[in-house]
Length: 381
Ligand SMILES: *Cc1c(COP(=O)(O)O)cnc(C)c1O
Image 1 (cartoon, protein in one colour):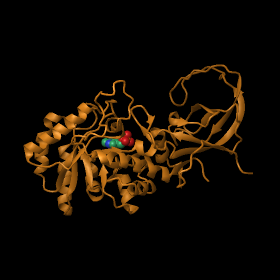
Image 2: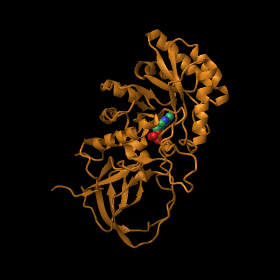
Image 3: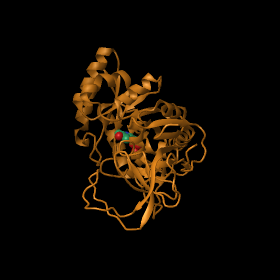
Image 4: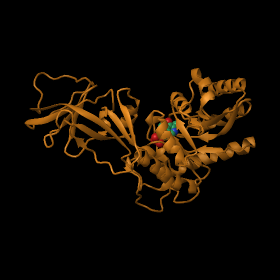
């Protein structure tokens, strides 16, 4: 098999998606499964669709096009505002898009009109995280203008927290979103089908995952209705089984659906202190060193061009000493993996995102649902 590669266990992805659907749907919340960290992989998208998610979301129109060309027919949501230069592609391939700029929505409408179609629009509301979104005071004006456009359908409103500033979804900001939805409905005499509350960081709020000192503390639903919030857009929690505000594993979900595998290209005993005058390394860092005497070090053919090395967890007995664009140096005094050995690592979200995006990294799909041991596999001779 070729290295480096990402190994994907589709059975675990399906299990995670299904487990979240089963917990959220009874609370009145549908799941849009977000595929941006897996470059719109059609294999993974199929696994997600089989698990009962209501739609697939991606931030890149290229990934949505890939899904369409692979024959995926599920509804798709572009979860980043369309670029003005890409609105024709968005109308062509995405069912709905998240929007915050009227000029973009006007372009979507005129293109959809010319194509004899109607494009779904969700208006994003800024609720404190200071990334995308219309400030609430300006929302009624934008809604009025969108309703007047001929070929877009206002499907609802949404918000996104946690990603930019780490602002946590709580009862308060989710209630604010519900109240905004209701006031828009009253003002305009319309019904908003979708109130899209956020991403994986909303699971603490929705499922009460966070340990709390005071159990009567608000900030979780505990089976109570989610106000008007009836959709979450979930990537990380499905793919890696973790909620992102504390990176805590979610009970009953697999955290090992993915592994990144690299091959050893050098194994030597070297001093642990560099020799010579030291300045910045290739990544602009000036690392510190402790003199631990001579150590066995392996180089894995895996670097910044393949993965974010800071997001890799190595197998027991190995520690990552550093990485440049193409070399991952691991301290391996105990196991000393021979040249040709394959080593698997557990990626976090940013490492997975980069590995799936790198043209140097292949993908290997499996459907076994077996426990994954981060392995060190010697070469066949
Ligand atoms: C990335 C993203 C998501 C999904 O985030 P996860 O943390 O992977 O669940 C949802 N909505 C928007 C707007 C995003 O950009």
